[in-house]
Image 1 (cartoon, rainbow, N blue to C red):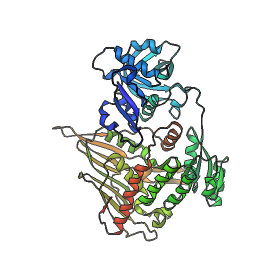
Image 2 (image 1 turned 45 degrees about the vertical axis):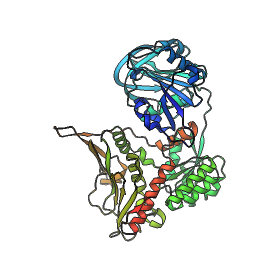
Image 3 (image 1 turned 120 degrees about the horizontal axis):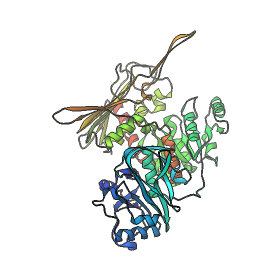
Image 4 (image 1 turned 90 degrees about the horizontal axis):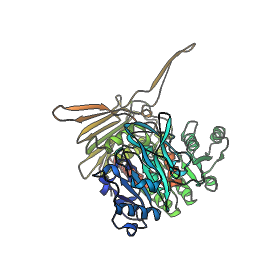
Length: 564
């Protein structure tokens, strides 16, 4: 049996040291600050106050025997003490001894296939912001009959809904039986659902729905980030768009037209005292992020900042300390972590398909005039590295967690003289282990390099940009065409793996479904359910430290800047 404990404040997360002990289906627990270990023998005396859940994985047991008397004693004493117990029971590996305790038994088994799981929408917070259906490939056990258990998840087979995950209140805890193979590769949504089963009270009918008010500072033009964040809040269960700030009266009128129920302000100080605003999203130009965020954090608002988080590491650190002092959440809209192609790349890397990754190269750009807005002005944007670089460096750190020891960057200013950002910048990360990483951005590259070029000890992954262009012939206008920014569509991903004397095996990597508002969903999950932030400010601090060093390096002709 596997125990799951809360991690003491200030301790080191050791879950990585027992990673091989985690059933694949429970991989999502690694996002939590939890300590995982083996359950000690000793019945009720072994149930310590820091244990929040126990997992029993029948699929990994070396024999087909049922639970022992000692294991049943441990489970019963744990449930009595208010500890959740999750039992994974794939076909042929189930527990008869739990039937009486849970008032349920396995009634059907099904071979490995693709199934569509349906969470029970009536059981409260456990299924908040979880889709109505989750596709999964697994062998299944289904349960019944029984009057005292609750079907947490069902599967529709032959037009009948059959319980595949059931929960029974036993003592102060929940006994959860899941008829899923622990080796099942979970989707993001299934991973979140399974994680909640062991970290939240599953049988939570009475929980009142809470809605958090969202305000946006820097509404901007139509179709800009203010409109995006407003639409995202409205589309996310548990969030509501309530206020917007913009000094431009025309943009305030546009916000009121697009979202008629919101309040608008000319200055962020008014939003800071709006009691209906729980979360403030700072969507202003980068050089203003620090001052606005600090003011809102001081007003005890939860704050989400557009990327880049700040211009300097010192600013980022002060923001982190201010959030900690006020007891509020701080995060950064690194929304490109939810891009379909990046999620597919990360899954391939995390799944070991490339082996040990030792080189990452990313690219964005083309040969075209830069935009003539603040994004291309160094005094407002922070410089060429800060725009797309905030995403690409974040990607690199997600894919290769080892932190670099030094940064160098070389830039060119040769063509576009009406804007102050560099025309091209190449940013290199240096590692103590000898690994390499590079981000290359150019507005003077006539041929695009791959968006991703990643080398590992077992294979190489590439991701190539696609031209996005619509063409139509109409009457009376005739031929019309429109092109879109190349970085908005997911890249075409291919993986070449060495398979021995036969050479290379080349395959395309499929993309996961879109998750357009994943950042906002995670923010709601964090504030309403206590789930971990996907974008932690301490992680983004390293992004800013690298970008600041790259800016200094490019100003000094590419000098290597050591990271303290």
